[in-house]
Image 1: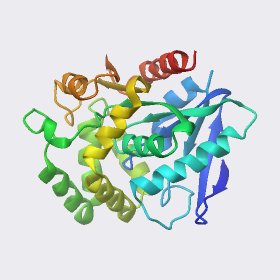
Image 2: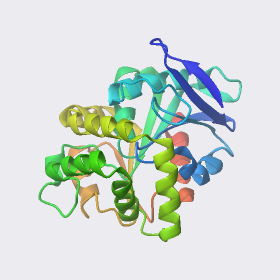
Image 3: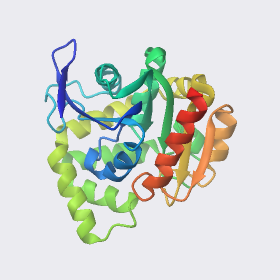
Image 4: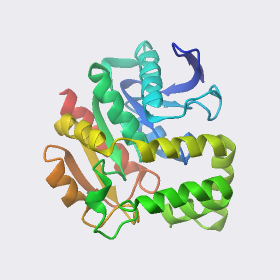
Length: 273
């Protein structure tokens, strides 16, 4: 794993695997890169794949701030470091993102459009929360999000257990325990809370506008059982983000990494052709 230093002096640990167009992962603060090993290994067969530890996690600097805009600037530094490697072709990157990470990717694409040729997101629809409020999802409830932050402050491991179980019905008890332990070791409680607060405070209208500005360079996929999105999430996205590429899949990047990797490949071919 390599290290790159930001202008503020933070050290970011990152890793590049494979050769070809660069794909950078922007993950959730509630997980760690090893969870995505299957999709990383799949993509590394024909892409250069960058994973990294955001500030406060893994082997990167512990000093914050832990917020979306800072994470976006840090991701730009990591991508630029990746672009300097001989294994990488092209001059810009595709960002593969999941919830929270999509906000980081959109902020980066807006501030540094020359650095990002596309964004592929799984399990996240970057629209104003109230558009989901009348649906059957958890994401439309701001009070629920605030409740989750409260639990994070009082029962961090309990919250991890609940969220990992809800988002990963395929995991048995041993699998959930392993994921909880790995997340707690990788992601300190105070760092998770700070990023959760940043996510809640992020200007949703601005994120939606950033998503719209990407046009067909934004690919949104939903699939499997996702209680955080309403069953008509893609229809809502289609009305708000008419140029975005929308796909229904049979699972997410953890349960079906092959499908997520195929989606990235199709986007790379389509945008870079």
